[in-house]
Image (cartoon, rainbow, N blue to C red):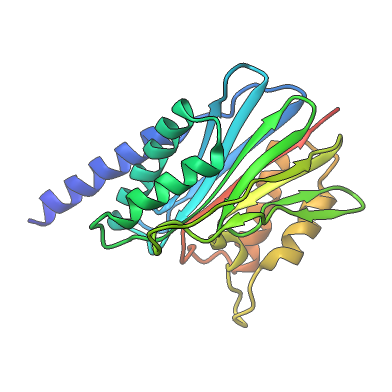
Length: 244
């Protein structure tokens, strides 16, 4: 029984890994980097990239299902596939989120809550997005921080939810930073969280470096903050830097 269970978990992990992009797409003048660390063999976080309409618009998403392990991984699978299918058929992202919410609400999965952020990034830096209860992604420059929090509640608990679209602009030499609460709520020995303020400070110190280096710096400091202990929760980070 234990061998069959472990085999099933390995297969679930392989299915989940197949849904997550191996590498970030080329989308100049932007650099992208991403990493997802599961607290168990399978996790409840995801990120995704999708070309929208043409090579001129890139869809970027990140999400975090309630709990972790197999039930959360199954919910992630449904949400990723649902988003991909919905966005292929409907250009109105708020409508896609409303339909996705109804589907997840009617699901019989034991894990039924998921926060999702989805953004469409254009070549000029324009961002159109919906934030469904996810920790606010941050537009970080050397002088300012903007939180992308327009949208609605998490997906799943309520049968009918309305979502709003938000608009933002990613300027040159600034970063869009998206993460799950496994990063923000990483505790230290005194039970303090790593938190948004430390995340912003780390990104700002490394703004002059490539996106991959910024991502590595955040993970390194987050791990050090937690005294190198294993992550208690799934931790995912996506960094998008505009270089010109």
